[in-house]
Image 1 (cartoon, rainbow, N blue to C red):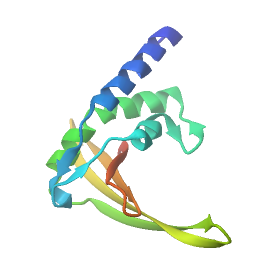
Image 2 (cartoon, rainbow, N blue to C red; image 1 turned 90 degrees about the vertical axis):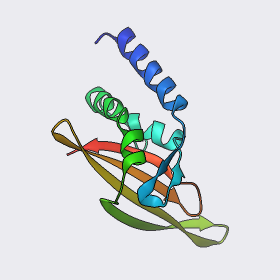
Image 3 (cartoon, one colour; image 1 turned 30 degrees about the vertical axis):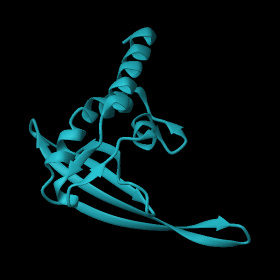
Image 4 (cartoon, rainbow, N blue to C red; image 1 turned 180 degrees about the horizontal axis):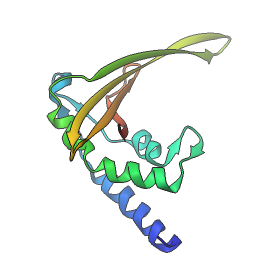
Length: 131
């Protein structure tokens, strides 16, 4: 893929992502899962580091399945809770992140979608991967 084609692919992926509406998740009591900048950023980056073109391409193509997997999830594949000390003035506060993983067999491979909630914020799409 040429640089021009790659830029167009990324542009189209961002447009598709931004057009994705919140979906209810049956496994989370039909709470809405939003698609915000955190999930969009995670498609192309891991923390502050840019993912390889191969990895970006793979995740963007898998993203097409994310909304459907979330809206059809009947159970949680895995749950994790992470707590982190954050400097707050002269002391610290605890920030809590909840992660729910939903798995689906798609075309002979398992696709996993992560939904995250930070503190009391909204639940949002965070990542997609395959096993």
